[in-house]
Length: 101
Image (cartoon, rainbow, N blue to C red; front, side):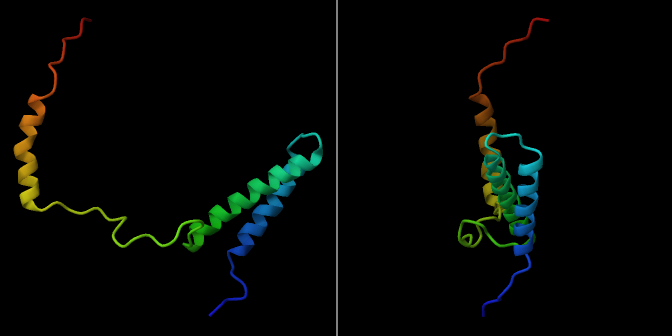
């Protein structure tokens, strides 16, 4: 089912308006239309960024693969193996020179 209007579109339109105003009033470019373009572009980008964060919709990429954002907790066996390897890893480090101060 399509929604005819999504509320976060207002954020993008507000960003466009704010960017146009900033481009017209704050940027001193020659010709002035360049300031309007840069301001409008920055406003649309900022509005889209805020709308994407607020709505939870992704801007560019598709859905994330399942489990991609989760960090797997190592099993106790894996932790024991890491602890056994740790002294060997420390032995491989070069000796530190004393600093002259």
